[in-house]
Image 1 (cartoon, helix red, strand yellow):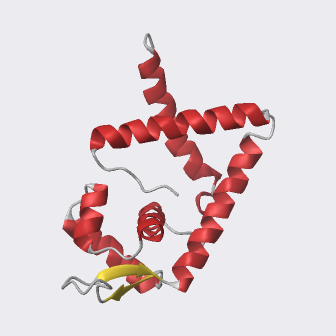
Image 2 (tube, rainbow, N blue to C red; image 1 turned 90 degrees about the horizontal axis):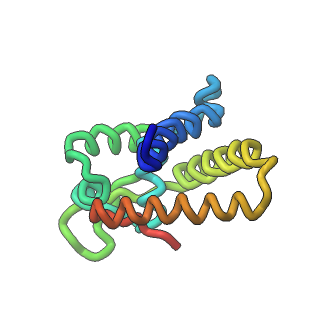
Length: 151
């Protein structure tokens, strides 16, 4: 790899794989959210109830794909369909108490796995990596035109 951007691409690809392997779900423990549910619930948690159209715009996914994913989430009890709180026609997906519980538990497990990985890093190294990773994600979002809501 001659260019730093080639190394970033390669390492980002591996990071996506490795993060998944840190989770108990990957080690055969059940009850974890699948990746799509984790992402959709995280977005709904950040923005509040969302329609299929807003989810489609936020993720750049086809409505039929989102219909399948949200149907599975409805069956799992992690979202519910509610009337638009703003009085619009489209019903929206809201996270349920069970969805909040499972998302919080999965996120905590992900953080525990990452903490094990970076246990030998200095606090400054962890903070620097977090800052640079956040910058990379924000720049990707800026180029893509779909920023992720952050608190």
